Every structure is written in structure tokens, then in C-alpha cells.
Length: 289
Image (tube, rainbow, N blue to C red; front, side):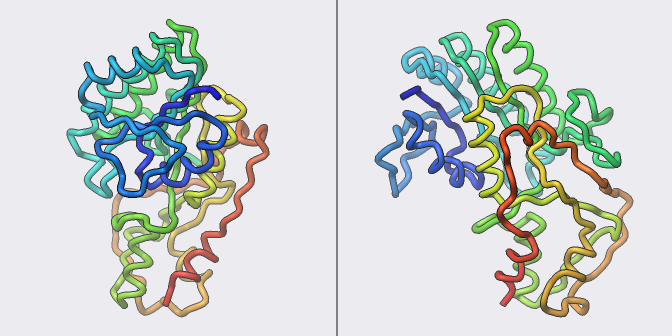
């Protein structure tokens, strides 16, 4: 079997993706420490991504065919301004460059909806869609995308840059829309919606993992938006769709920043026949006590 290296396998998305790959590839994962529950089909490599010399040695020794790079600072709310974004930018460039130098054939790297112009009615699969970046997270992801393209051109490596939109699912940490909503409702605390015009594009983490698996299996290339075909106005989603009356718990609060869009272009996903299996409405109804 071909050798596959994965970073971020212990993260929210990585935990859903890893089981889909271990029967198809010889999987190695880079971790800071060995997990208590090891998978016998996975080779664990203990290393810090920020240790560039060690990463260089690992990739020179192992010579991986494929790479899926998920690792990034994803601590809810704090990741937008974290200085770790710049550290991950440099570490990711080093990782990908050494992967290519040592014979890598194909890679998937993770971008973000933050790269897009979310005030536009249509989200396009375009590198230069967003004009102004306001956070360290946004600019770091954008710069990594540009560097990956340059490195890939130099070594003639095929890759896919996947822009992930809003996620939800079991064991998602607090600080995200759905996990905070679930916590507030079950604790009977007010849940604040900052703007009635806010819209979100939500996908279950298992659906995202399935999309990545199929894109990886098909070795799809280029910039791809991994997004739902449906977007929701937040207040309509919470007030109109749930089986319990939440009107006395939802609180509105004025906010100048508005994210509102109508359609997501996901044409490149059609060729892998990806369909969502999980309903956001059904998920939340199952979680409300």
C-alpha cells in the first residue's frame, strides 16, 4: 500500500477522517504524544511540527507518497488572532516543501471559508476572491495557499486546497455556533445571536470527512469549497426549525459585521458524487434535552 502521512489526526476533523483511510493506505500520523487508545493500523511519529529540522529528517527517511495536512491552531475564538498562526504558516511550508523534495506525489491541505468574501451572494472557487484580510488566521491561510501553489509548480506535484466552512458534530469544543447553542439551551441560558441577517453554511464533521476521503481517493486537484448546498439564516434556523419553543431563550444583539450569502459554488464536489447524510435540524433536535 502507498504511504500516507497525516497531521492533525487527533483533532475534531482528523478523528472522523482517520478511520476512513487506515484500510486503504499505510498510514502514519505526526503527534505530540502517543494517544492512550492506539490504533494498531496506524504508525505514530512523535514530533513537533514547529521543529523544522526533525520534520525534515522524518520526511527524508520515510519518503511518503501522500500527505493530508489538517493541523492548525483551532482553539475556538482565540485562533483568529493567535500568533501561532504564523508559526503554523512557516511549519506548514516546511512540511510541504520537504514532502515534495522527497518524492511526494499528491497532497490535500486545508483552507478556510475565511479566505472567501462572505458578504458576496456567491462564494466562488477563486484564489483572489477576498480583498481585505482582518485577522492573523485569514492572512496565514491565504499565504500558505499561495506558497503551496508555488512549491507545487516547482516540483510538479498535484494537490487540492480544501476550503472548509462551518462544522458541527459530536464532541465539538465550546466556542462554536452549534456547540454553544447546545450548551446554552441545555443549561437554560440565553443564547445571543449578534445579527438577524447572519447566515451560515453548516456541515456535519462526518460529511466533511467523507468528502475529503472521496476527494483524496479521486486525487482531485485545485481549490475546492467543501460546503453544504444549503445556507441558513441563523435566527431562522434556531427559531423556525426546532421542535421545542426557544423564543424565550434566543436573544438578539446588534453587530456591525454581517455575513450573509445565498449560494455556495461546489461544482468540483459533484464529480465525486458526494451527498450530505446528516441533517443539522435533526442533529440539534436530538441534542436538546
